[in-house]
Structures are given as C-alpha cells and as structure tokens.
Length: 300
Ligand code: GDP
Image 1 (cartoon, rainbow, N blue to C red):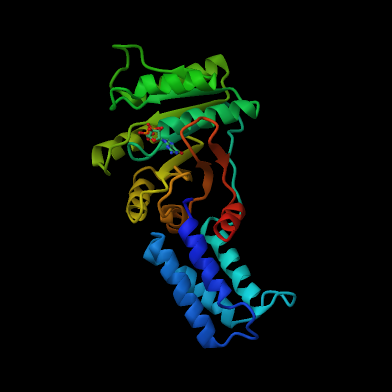
Image 2: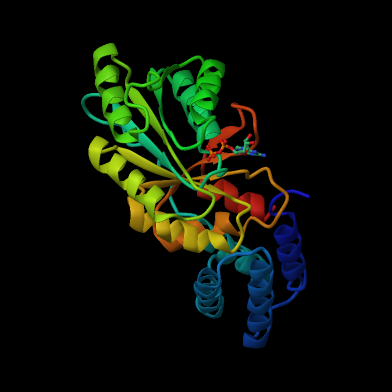
C-alpha cells in the first residue's frame, strides 16, 4: 500500500457517488464534504487543517462553478485538487542561494527523522546540479553520527567537515563556524550542517540547534520530518518552528505505507514551504517537492 493509498481510494469512492448527478444540492455537497473530512482524519491529517480544508471546499462547491466545461462531479474534484495544492504550499519553492559566499543550509529535526541521510541526498543532488557542497558533522550527540555522515559523504562523493578528535569536539557551534571558514577558504559553494536530534522534543537539543542557527546565520534552515509521524506532526513542527524558525520543510519516508497525514499538515500549520521529498534509503531516493504533483498523486 502506498503512502496515500487509503486516502486516494476513499476520495475516489466519494467522487464516484457524485458521478452522473446534475446540479449538486446543498445536501449532496454536505454529504461529500463529510466523507472528505472522514477520509482526511483517517489519514492522520491534523484536525485544524481538516476543518479549514473542508470549510473551503464546501464554500467553493456551494458557490460559483469553477469552469463551465466541467460537470458538477468534476467541479468538486477540481476544487479538492486546488485546495490540496494550497495546503501543500501552493507554488513550488526552491532553495534560496546566497548572493555571495557559501550558501549555508542547516538541517534540524528529531532523531531518526532522516536528517543525516537527507544531508547525503541533498549533497548528491546539489552536486549533480553543478554545485560544490560540503557536509558538516555538527551532530555530536549520537556516537555514530559523525561516522554516518562521513559514509554518506563518501557515497555522495562530497567533502565532509568533521571535528578532529579532541579539537572542537562536543561544541557543535564551533564546528559549524569553523566549517564555514573552511568552505570559504576552499570555495565550496554550499555548506550543509547536520545537527543533533533527540527522540522527543528536548529543550537542550532545541537550544543547541538555536545556538547553531544564531552562530552561522544560515540561508535556509530545513526541518526534516518523517511523513509517518502521524498526529505528532503538528506539535513537533510547531516546537521546531518556535525553536529554530525553519525556512522550509523536507518530508522524509514518503515511501512509507502508513497514512501520511504529516505530509498534508505541516506546510499548512507552519506556513513554511515543503522543498524536498525523501522517498527511500538510497541517496537517489530524493526529489524536489511540487505541491501540484503531490495533489495529483493523492487524487490519482
Ligand atoms: P537522523 O537521526 O535524523 O539523522 O536520521 P537518519 O538519517 O539516521 O535516518 C534514520 C533511519 O531512517 C535510517 O535507517 C535511514 O536509512 C532511514 N531513512 C532515512 N530517510 C528515509 C526515507 O526517505 N525512506 C525510508 N524508508 N527510510 C529512510
């Protein structure tokens, strides 16, 4: 079962019931909206997002037609599609590169969200786009994190800046600052800073991430979130927004087979765009995120 398989099936059934109908009555529309609401909640989309979403679908379905060339059932599908694109962030947004000096991209998120893997994926992708990225191991909490970053760096064929044993060890802020100096010196054009996560939201971890953010003044702070995190998505995203004020989101594990509601909630509750999607364990399982394509995939 694909990530949105269940949601896709439920929405398709809902739309099927409208097929062949002439003008939809308010009761038809209410029934449809109720089914959409149920389908979204079952997919673990956050309640506040579902409420807004279904409210807008209902208002528009009761209001003017979307296009004269569509029958009533198609109109509803079109409205749902438009609103899905909207909650996924509307227009696709790409990385904002620095005008001078290296572009600094900081990664934040819970442990296990997929940050280190993402660092490798992003570096490999940037390299294929003609950039010269450098990875920075500023996750000094997890014993294996530095080695893991070195492994993905090697797989991606990019440089990795890691603290020398005994030098800067334990101080991720210093590691990150030194790394940026090194990037300037060696003319790497993108610096990707991997930071520590914890299994749950933790004040110390958040303070550390906030300190790194303050020290390196990144061009982008990407919040990596596991698409399978379920209803915790909203609390986690809000905590990271308060803690590090991220500029964009990366959805990881979009290849999963649970309900994927996080994917549909996070852009909407934080007002931050989703920039990339991570879709597997290999470094090539990675793609720029397009809200309209994701909406089509859900309505497929
Ligand atoms: P970090 O603690 O945030 O740095 O997370 P890691 O990058 O170490 O990833 C945690 C686990 O999730 C690892 O076993 C990764 O192989 C796996 N992982 C990362 N991204 C994806 C993804 O997009 N899909 C799947 N299926 N697994 C992933």
